[in-house]
Image (cartoon, rainbow over all chains, first blue to last red; front, top):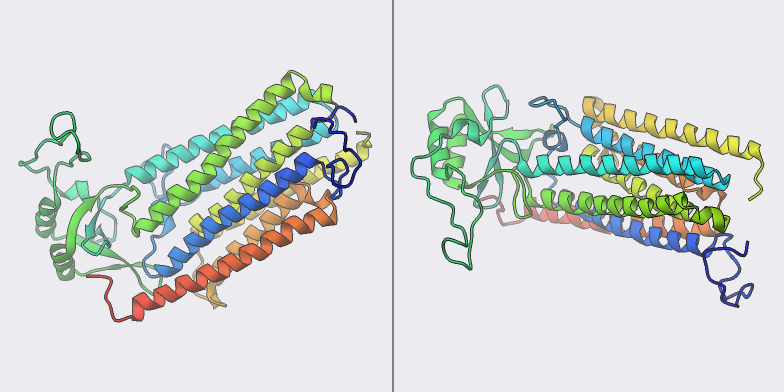
Length: 327
Length: 119
């Protein structure tokens, strides 16, 4: 085994020279474990911070089932969890193909390593695409909401308890003005796209439609959001409604507490970035396998190392899935 | 590199077995998450509902299988295993305990303090 990846340093066999393996794992694998441990702590920090904010806003946190209920080609159907469950399966299965690639590497079967790694890369790519779609839905939003002056969110229901979108009951106003763009007006300022109606139009329309009710963020003791009576709804909207929110960004979102969207973007984004870099590393190692680098080296340990990283990414997703979508 | 073939048939079988376990646990989680049986949601046990306890325990079981079987932790030396697992478990428990207690405290301040946060 003189043909390892590590250059010879002349200190092999000496205790502190890196030559012997006190933990019976090679230098590279040990370093990967170091990295994984520290990265696990980073993710734990994020998830614990999410838990902190959730405990802080325990009585008004958005209900995940209502936020993530889209499924491709099933428009308007309430499909909580199915999509994210599918994503979880894709990732678990790509983990299985990865471990099969590592196993084939132990047996020095190059062809099998190639096949299984290709499947793993495919799984990673599907997962990334799914996550992009999930983000798109989250950012776009579905119903829209009104933010009060204290930063709380008011959502709209009809008398059957079904959600009603802001667009559906607010008519487009006559007096719309053009969006101010930096190239046409003051070059140092710009604004986001104006919507065709504003909060006053919404308030008027709400008062006219007898079937509409307001739902606040507050959760009752059955874990349901509080629905106000018609009179309370009008009063609440009139006195406290400040502006309309469509979809989600880093400063506010139609689902509830602003921190909810911040954590969603940050945690799933950071995880997605790990998946992306995992896919890139897998592709590099895949081509190395193809041109026979590890065959010549006499060991497929590199596949094993990238495998460790890939399984770690899967492991993190298992926790993100639980704490973001289930609990 | 001279592994015997029986060992390899064993690892292959183990991989599919673990995949089966992980899929089953995920399906149980998803089904429970969709149905949300009332008696699990509204029965509390040590500050958490039974449903959340089930989710968290199943997640930890899944984490165990991924680390032990897929990441080959079960074949590593005890020294490496303890270095990674104990460090992680200890620090993560510490982090969670501190942050969740503080989060709960701030929630108390919000709900029983002398200021209104909803105006």
